[in-house]
Structures are given as structure tokens and as C-alpha cells.
Length: 329
Image (cartoon, rainbow, N blue to C red; front, side, top):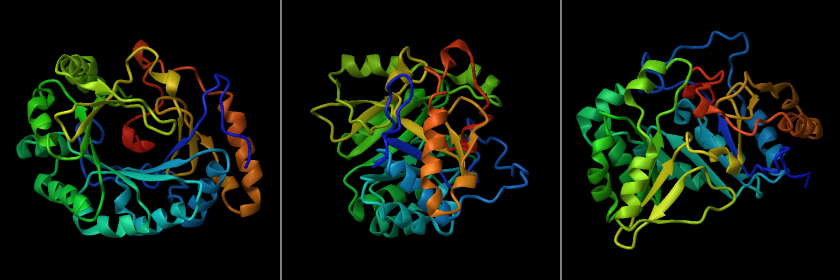
């Protein structure tokens, strides 16, 4: 095994978020309110299966044990199940996850599980079908709920549900969400609304701190769980009376970046050291042959020395990211 990926702040990277498309069929107000628009790039074809195989092997050989397949909406790729299989072929990858809007789950999740998908996150920003429609631009609430039910039927022990917190939209639904997970093994993950280059007005109007939710949880007997080294950034809380869990992702909290353990590769093959950072570092030219792995690893290791100590979101820096779909959130 090659040397573990590590930056100059001694942070080790066990987790790769691999985008396979930036196309999405939803129009979420906080991400793609006007719907998906192609970038118009000359080299706009998304990573191929052999390229995915090579980049996964390079990361796995440097200590990465978890890969999350992201988008856009990753299940829009016709070869989505093949992508899972390609990643599962590497025995060093212990967790293979995806984040999906859930619209294809009911008919596809059994096949994904058989291919090797170990963890699943579904975006559900409201338990009110009308508000769900208002936020996502799609009237598919019941379809997504059926997909979550199907995931349990085919053997998933837990499903994670992502909820982007928005003042005056869904923040008042906490009691409804808590009731929903009382007897269901769902980890609800409340994600603070993040400011990106195209979303300044929305952020100003709807941002609410996750600290508000955390204070309510602690006051009601919820207890913080210990993180594993390839876990995501959520602070996860459990309660003896609840089968479900609550995760809070609060990027504006001081020291949020201290525990950073993840890197991102975009659907066009660029390495992103941070969700809110630079234009990305080209890797695709080194994904064309198996013999290029050492050079690919070397380029990543060299670029890691340029990773900043923080995203500086708390200082109002939104970086170069126009919207979250562009590099997989």
C-alpha cells in the first residue's frame, strides 16, 4: 500500500466523495432552482467505468476505505449499478454509499444492494408533500417514501435521510421528523443551508443554525455518539427511546474543518480539496492506464499540501463553487 493521503495539518483522508454526473432531475431551491443546465465544457463527458476503476484503486491504495457516489443525481447514469460493482471489486473499500433524491429507489435499490452498495442517503427536505414539492420542484414525495420502505425490505438496516434546514420552510417540522424516526432505523441528518456563489439571497433569507436543533436535542436527553475515522462530518445523537438517530452537519461551527477526512473528485475528473475552494485539479489525464497509478497518487499527495486549514465559510467566503451539484455536494 502506498503512503496514506495526509495534508500538512496531519489530517488523514479515509473518505472519497466521487461524483459521477452533475445532471439532476430535481430543481431544489437551495441547489438548482432553475433546473440543470449543461456546463458547455468542451470535455463534458463524465468519468467512464475504467476511469472510475483507476481512481478508486489509487485512493484505496492510499488508505481510503469509504466511497460515496454522488451527483447531481447519480442514479440517472444508466450504468449506476456497474459503477457500484467496479468500486466493490476493491476489497480495501469497506463502505460504498450513495446520496440520491430517491426517485429511482423503489425499483432499483435491490439491484444496488446486490451489487455492493452498503449505505444509502436520501434527500427528503420535508414530510409535508406540498412543502416537498415546493422545495424540490417535483411532486414525488410518495414515490421517495416508497423507495425508503423498499430499502428496508431488501435488507438495509439503516437509511440516512438528509434534510437541508431552512427557516420559514421546514425548520418547524422537527417534532414531525422525530415522530417519524421513533420506531424506524433512520438517521436524520439536518444540514445547515450553505452559502454558494449563486445563492446569496436564499441564504440570507432562510439560513438557520443547527445549534438551535442541537440545544433542543440535548435538553431532551439525546446523547452524542463517537465518530469513526471514515464517518462524514455529522455530529450524531442517539436517544434510548428512539430507534432512529439525529445527525447535525454544521459547517459554520468553529473547528468544523479540524476533523476533515474527505476529498472530492468531480464527474469530469477534477480533484477538489474542499467543497468551497478552488477550480479543481485535473486528474483525468492520469486515469487512462493502470500503469499511471503511481503518478496519479503522486499528484494527489502533492496537491494535498495546498489544502487550506478551513473553508472560511464563517468569514463569508463562498469559494468558487457555484452550486452544490457541480462537484457532488
